[in-house]
Image (cartoon, rainbow, N blue to C red; front, side, top):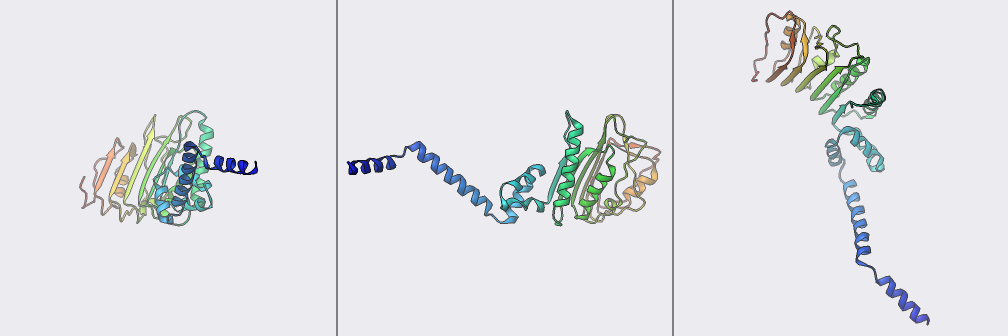
Length: 249
């Protein structure tokens, strides 16, 4: 009887159903694939992370110790404020998230920085974020700033961007978009401007208050090739002189 029981046990062990075997193999394959990805060099993993939205890239830090700090070296940062219900709560979450990313991120240079949000009463924070991007030698910078009905930002109160932006040596592409349902937004230009590497400049829905602001802006773009001025408003501007010998479009 003991021999029969042993043979039966061996038979049950060997009698693995195809479905169970497939599930086991799939699990092993998944584990191997996960390990294979995690074992890739940091540079490749960081390249993969740049293809994700910033918020998703940050979430990978919870996968394992291997992934915990990888996102801190990504060179593409995209921050887009969400619209919709419960906007005040989402605003707080958005502000905290951007602050956290910029504080925890390492000192490596940035390739791209995209920021789109309302200004509201947080102009100082937004300027600090832009300054941080410039400090990290960002090459492509896209800024979209607006206001809603409760904001103090309107055409009579200029948005003053940080001066370091206008003397950046690393910027090759700059896009400034001002969106407001009620009015345009006044663009205040500093007295000294020098974009030594800027090749593409796009400005949308901004107010240029006078000839001086125009002259200052377009006298500091020596290698500019592509210029877009879309739906801008010209207050007291009698003439526009653009000093950009390499301008193509």
